[in-house]
Image (cartoon, rainbow over all chains, first blue to last red; front, top):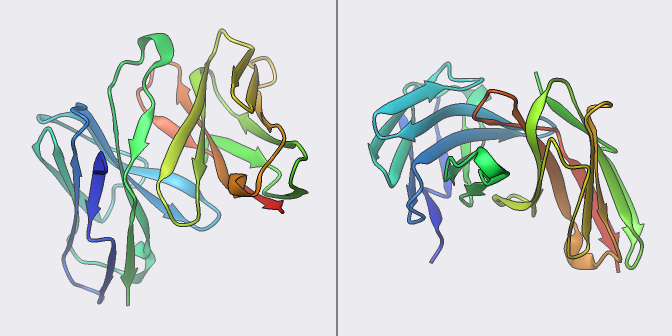
Length: 116
Length: 111
């Protein structure tokens, strides 16, 4: 079974709709992240959470919100979707052990979101 | 703005050849990481090099880091068709906790 799962894998919605993307992990990591990927722009960080009580905005948080329901679950919401939020969305986890350079990230398979 | 930029944006080589891609970044880093992404899928971590290291190897991968030039390179030796993917560098800035990704190099290995 995959260590980091995302649901749904694909979603088509209309402008103005509220959308929730979910991420679950079985790696036991404290840190979780949401990124979006647009063609030619690489990955950009939306929100990140270092534990259940810690939520932080990333580079492009406007128009998004998150909820860390448990160590294993981190959800991303688009309160009122707009077409320029059409993108590939990735969840990732990490141990947070920066010392010794061990803080690599583990990615889910992605959610392809289309906003019409 | 992107912290890192890869060069070239796209690279096409024959199977068996070596592939070299470069990453430049803007500010002081704690470490630099390379990730691979198969088309439309999640990223997979390949290798991490710390700011006090100059070279690192993992199988057919060789990574170098030049902090004075703020640049890194990833060499894939004896490439295979299965190496076809996009490769991203990502940096952890000094004093920060997050990864900043570059724009990626699209590698195509022709059988």
